[in-house]
Picture 1: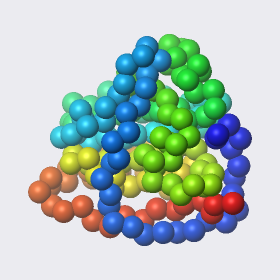
Picture 2: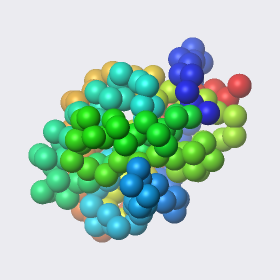
Picture 3: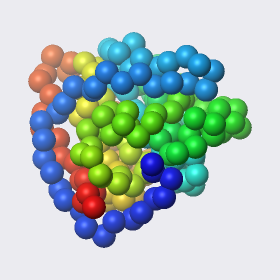
Picture 4: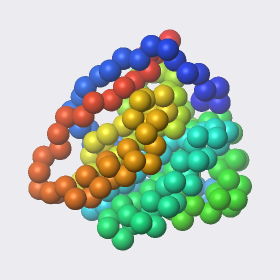
Amino acid sequence: MFSRLIVLSGLIATAYAARPLPDVPIPTPDGRQIDLKQYRGKVVTLALISTQCEECIGLMGLLSTLQKQYGPRGMQAVVAAINDDARTEIGPLAQRYRPGYPVGFLDRDAAMKIAALAPGTRPVVPILMFIDRKGVVRFQYFGNDQPMKDGEKFIRTIMTGLINEDPNKPARTITQQAPVPH
């Protein structure tokens, strides 16, 4: 699955129209499911992570801080682990860090579907998706994308923009960098 994180030297920049978030339930360690549709009306920041990635665990901490700050303004953070051992590792990780937002896991097929990735793509985690109040994926970034190197500032800028956006405006085209499939 995604247990080996490979930094790819070649990137393809692709532009696509904003897209509806696929209906993919996210199982949780306690046997429930996170249904992202329940957050319609909120700006959702969905992070797909590996439980074995230091940057991903750091992102979980940052999202906890941002959830406290932006939650009252209409933001909801959600994290889903996507590595091979995610099912057994996400529970202890959540207990250790107590993130303050829902966490779960996805298998390979569900992760590829929710991130709209082509078969054979090997993404670099974390994958950060910003979903507007209508359930439309507006921005998606991979761990090796340049904006991700700006960390907190970049995330705050997008969150604030989506929170302050007029919900009656149509979603605009977004740009994403996707790893080259091999």
